[in-house]
Length: 107
Image (cartoon, rainbow, N blue to C red):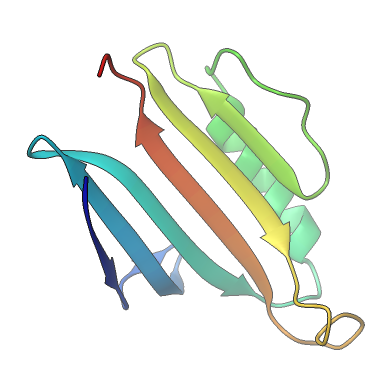
């Protein structure tokens, strides 16, 4: 698998902190990215994103206030988590939304 870390871009109208693209056998196999959300309202915003992502997915694990995941019928899997570094907890500092998307395929 060949991977490259990049910076820049946007998702949900927010700047992406960094993202990782991985290719296997010449095909995109994994995308991992993180964005910062303001602490105020981050959990509600994350919940809205999870609602949208989980719609139409199968094999969804139990959802928590800080994580969600699922697999589409076409075999695309995602997992997302919401977190804040311990030193930033309790301050009005960014919360990190991390998303990993990969394709389930026979290897």
